[in-house]
Length: 128
Image 1 (cartoon, rainbow, N blue to C red):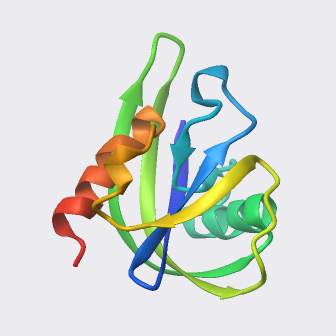
Image 2: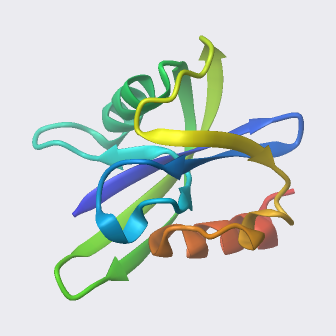
C-alpha cells in the first residue's frame, strides 16, 4: 500500500495528529497526516487531496523527504513523507481527535503509528 504524509512546519514545530478512525491498531496513535494514493493518482495530488479531506486546509508540496516501510501480518505500508507548506485555511479535524505542533525533539515522545516512527527519527536527526 502506497501512503503519503505531510510534514507541515509552523514556528519551528511540526504538525502531528491523533487518529480517531481507520485501522484499529492505529486508533489513538499520532501520525503525520496524509493517506493512501488512489489508482492513477500522483503522490503530490494524493497528499494535497488527503490534507484537504482530513484537515480542510490547502497546502503546497515543497519536496519529497524520505520514506519508511512497515509490514504487519495483514499488509505492507510504504509511507512517503513530503515537506509541505500550509497555504490557507483553518484546521478542522475529520479523521483525527486532536492535533499539535511539536518540536523535532518532542516527536518521538508521542505514541506514533509504527510507520511514522522512522519518519520522526529522520526529522529529528536531519532536519535543521
